[in-house]
Image: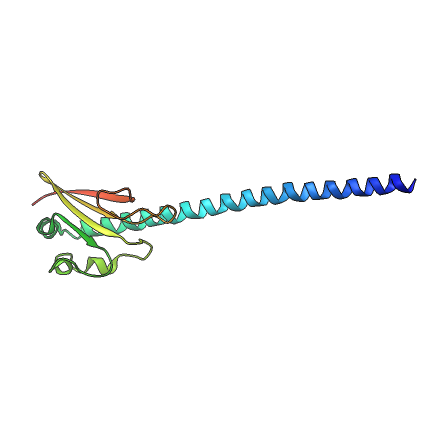
Length: 145
């Protein structure tokens, strides 16, 4: 009789261990989904910041200054690789919000249009930031003066 009771207690312990395993797998899945949602939120926030910054640049009416810089790939924050680029942008780069990692301002002339883009490095997969690369970017087109 003692043997039957001991085997039932051991079986209950195995059931508890299996339940803990299933529960821990469910918690790990929920945490992974939460981390994915946070990464997507950060990427979306970076896109909104880039869109607002680009909209601000376009609304400043710097089309002629941008056309003089084209073609160019300028860092949004940090050094000034082209002489006079900061003056041509009218201090716009200093107003760009944080959250755009390694952001670059890309200016290209496409016939009568001027393509102005902001490219940045995403948070999840590390890709190099380039005007023609796989990095995310927002683009605006202006009529070239």
